[in-house]
Length: 513
Ligand code: NAP
Ligand code: MG
Image 1 (cartoon, rainbow, N blue to C red):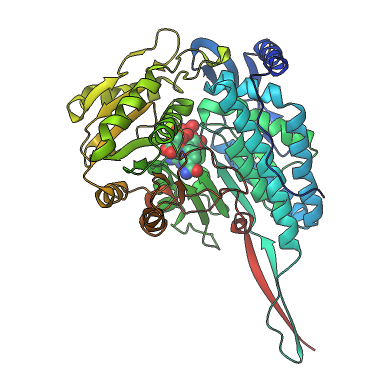
Image 2 (image 1 turned 30 degrees about the vertical axis):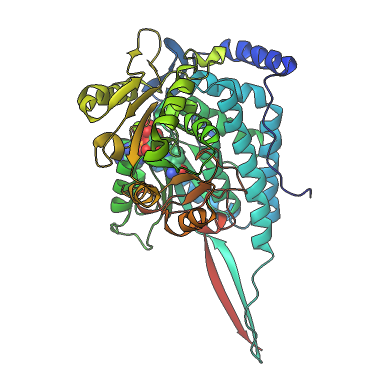
């Protein structure tokens, strides 16, 4: 087996790659508007209820029509997962890992098409969409290798007269609930880890990205996974999602999404239902309010570039996005001016045409993000952006508020859009205190050339993913294991060496010789 390495990103400055991308977009455009059924126990199932998934940049365009599951479908899906568990849990780990290698190979082969689907369904520009596909490939390659390592076993202390071992076994049938913002990578990663561990799953994709969810299911089928190992159950989160969260036979829930939903799932899953014989395991990765701190010793140009990229990449719709730039007074105006200047250069337009900044995901997100412009206008000086237009697509100009109070709503709430707040700090100590002042703790960056401060940040900047002298987005599988502290989640460290084991339980076996 070749050693793990990250899937290379595509260089779209090369005309050959641009042409391939244009062709893939044209091919995918011809497939818009198709209907995607549920897949339960290997059977496709149509539903009376259909949800239309729209192109955020052009919301008249229907990307796909997705069948919506109801409670009966949810019941069937969980039953199908348990039926499949009996044999899947006994399939050797090495064989299960092979399915992940196959998934990675299939995604490599269909890379441009998958990228095009992401461009059209969630409005990622080509670079962001390509990175989402690469991450999905990485998760499969990485978790397959992790599973093979787990298969090597652990060594225990030996005592005379006994043979002692500890093995990792799967949990059972579980639920995977994914967000729309990394609809391929996160859904694929959460699912791949669970199944390579020997579990079977019901996947509930986010509604705004359910066509990509269907593509994930198609990949599972193309990889030859036995029926019922993965069951595709699109539908309303509050209906089928919640139904299965509360179900006594759901063994685990692997959730990524907002804090509100994650906390609700955690709370509901904690209640033992009649007939339930286990404590449900909940892995919940949730929101963020991430900061980049800049001190007076920093490379200010690098800091400004890092802030702009981290704040406005994918319209700020990343859990890791920089939504707060906390800059010490001595260089505050300088950094702010440069960030505003760079932000004004960002092109805004359709993802299809590869503009840097594209539409936000849907009408609800558009309404929520722009509500801050009205409700929080007095919380900061608006330096650029603040304009929006949803006639064709849900476009919001990259927006910067300056001189925001660290306790203001703009500085505390996850807006999840292209909105950046600048916060002035007296000095580095003060900046670090502000950086730690939210309920979240996902990512954070410090730009500084002072070794003592970098070391201090390692100890005191309380985030799951700390970056020094680089932006706070773009975690790579295997390189930057990802997961947050506090209300950002259970710190599961997706893409890290401990992740697959979260979906397993250890069994100690002791034999008297
Ligand atoms: P969301 O609104 O919480 O939805 C996530 C998933 O939960 C969707 O599939 C949703 O279904 C489902 N859901 C909604 N209500 C539910 C309920 N009562 N019971 C069970 N499931 C339910 O999140 P999102 O808007 O898709 O994604 C954005 C959020 O995800 C942001 O807060 C972002 O920070 C976070 N995120 C975190 C990470 C991380 O690694 N920490 C990564 C990516 C995103 P519907 O589509 O039907 O609503
Ligand atoms: Mg949502």
